Length: 207
Length: 207
Image 1 (cartoon, chains in turn red, green):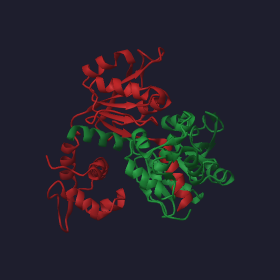
Image 2 (cartoon, rainbow over the protein chains, first blue to last red):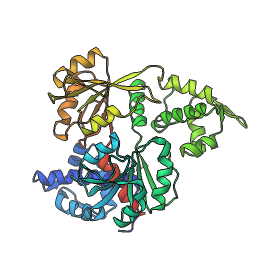
Image 3 (cartoon, each protein chain N blue to C red):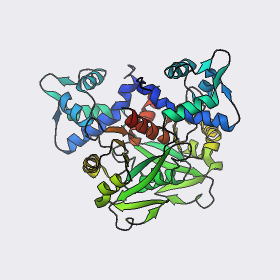
Image 4 (cartoon, each protein chain N blue to C red):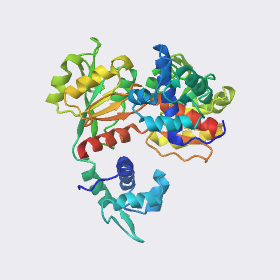
């Protein structure tokens, strides 16, 4: 599939995939865009437009074939290949992410964690080994990890990013408040929880 | 200020506010849109357009007065009033959020947590008291809490939401994978970490 999919559509793919699996689990083999719209709260026209990017997927009056959609999304999301991810910074949030079940209903697993705390280095936390930062490059290359999650203190976030880029990382999920600099071919996804919460409060107070 | 601000602009306000405070902390009292653009990675034209919603804030060739902007954003973001937030679900992610320093550089504090675990109820976790779910309505009303963060298992997320709505909650930050139903006047902000990570992986694999 070489057609360029809009980013907003790409962002909804995992959501579609997960809900389709829920439907299959409930033995529901056909679904209309209206039903999907109701359960995932994306409007039906958007869903139809999204699905249309992938070619003819449904029939009018019949709806979509759930298994066919799942097979298709599996391929497109590489659900059949497990993606290993590194976690940099095993503090409170890092620990929570290690425990967070990314793997359930997804193809992602944190397979290596890194920290500078001597008490953590060499230990296994929630089934994930913790390595020294000094071994970052070696481990990422050995394990062919291209995606990293950063939950380090803001003061060292850029330095850690530079090391990750040197080690060949191609995608960074950034939980710090720092806006990171990286080469254009490294994608950075910012999850700024304080910002999200403030935006919510602002919306509640001003709407 | 009654002028309607676009949501994308509103979302950037906390970011602006935080970076302006960093500038002030570094004794930098003037800033150009180009400099701001560089450090927060929002393009300068967008910044100027955003600021223009709030009236004349800068002078050509002089840049923006950092203190003036901060005072202004403080007012607009209600930074001078502390917003109390409830946390529902003190599991791994909940614990991490209790430890997460929302308060630093922000006007938000988790002031009450709720769980069904008898070992947690009545305890104080990271300086926040944990109450029984049975006391939800009473505590939220007593503490005048209108914003809640949900980190409960998916299976009970909607039931918890219904209780929150009954208790007068106006904004929900939802960390579960469930798309919650709530009345129109209740705002829901979804933080779907699995989805974010899958989107990042998809982008890295397909760009």
